[in-house]
Length: 252
Figure 1 (cartoon, rainbow, N blue to C red):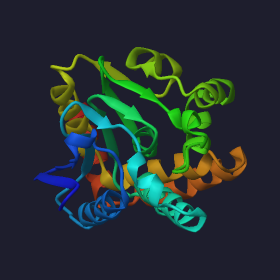
Figure 2: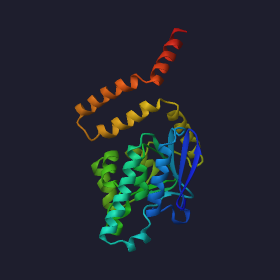
Figure 3: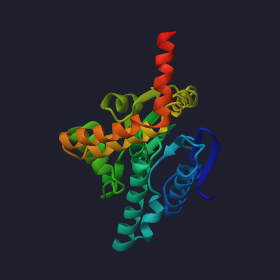
Figure 4: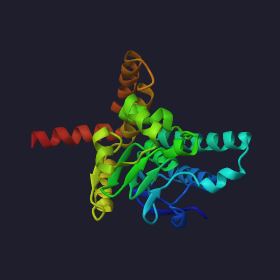
């Protein structure tokens, strides 16, 4: 692939955004290849957790602005539509996806990270949605996902100004879950992914679905979905084994 590299390390699948000379900027080819890679890992039964990161000093610095000059209104709409559909695919994937933010996560790069389930960042990372400085605004889901993560006012401030924020501030605002040193980033990501991969994959998938869909539903609808899903999770072989193991240990 031209813009993506994949490392299978069961139970992990590592996706590297791989245009380091362009700070891993997004073009149409990257959208296409990232979608193909995610689909491949989705169908790989040995992969329990997917980790997305960047090659070089950036996670992803956003869309490739040089590409914008080739866009008319119709092509711009199609580009945004493809990007949004990719983010939706990441968000709705039946497997957990971790964004390992190793540097700049700007514009479309931050939108990729926001579509992931968990974000862990290096202390040196900087995050932002600077599209307003080009006279446009986020088009891959940023206007919708950012307020859900940091609140309306903070999201509007970030998008109105286009200012970058530090990883520590991102953690304080709820945009990033964990911040560690640059040296510890991969090790801490592995620890997190290992713990998640050891859990029931059926339960993980249902939790992800319930949280994502529940946030866009009434609390009553969300609670009803939770009860129905719990009944399914409870009957799986994995749940039965884990419950039996727990009870055996308590008796011992």
